[in-house]
Image (cartoon, rainbow, N blue to C red; front, top):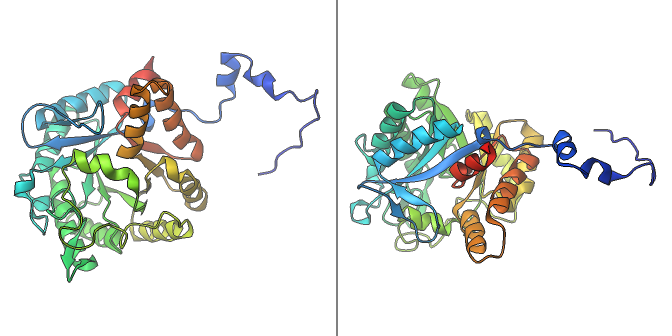
Length: 335
């Protein structure tokens, strides 16, 4: 893009356009609306709401509460919900068998939400880590995460979620080749309209800790590697993210995601500029927890920080943001 040269001061006074609220709004380069938000929520198998200690304001919801939340999302103008399961640790196993349970909590929640608010899109996480007792996203063989064996289980999980009514499958496992195999399975089952939002550039980040608390994730290192660095990306790498994104697009992803969000805005911008694909960022649990902790200590203005952080994703080029702040932000934006 060619940028016209600026006239020297005082002919150019950049503060002129900032002098009033109306003029600032008139020339604003990016705008955040409720339609840019995907509400991230956790569903559990019991009744009622259970607060998540490490994420003030976030609760694990029952299936009935998820249905009510879907109606709330619709009324707030939030177009989609991303749902994640909390599974009792005593019911987990090394293979994550419950991930493909057609009567499991995710299937029941999806059906309840689509019945309550069919206008709201439902996005399901395709990954085994909420269901494995070892906390990894895949099947462990000989002490390592087995790529192809894991994909077989992910396909089973994806088809169960789709049959329940899921609109967007979001594989977050970071196994090589899983997008193409899931897409082929969807086509063979007649689910050609099911969308895939790939966790294409997902980093081995320290910012996931509160989420692991929220879903009751198994302790890493009990079986297999003590971290996820053999399948999630190295935080030092940028070009690698473009290769991951290119592969997932070539295999049939409709949308791509960068995760975490705020520490990786440079990756968001590179992906948007390189591929011109609908690109989303996940404002992850650690980002949420940092803002809430600082706000509760009186160190930052909570509402301003929420909207400023979400606006940063739009400024970087995101089509939308997956965030635990979605309902609060939508209410603020609707004022």
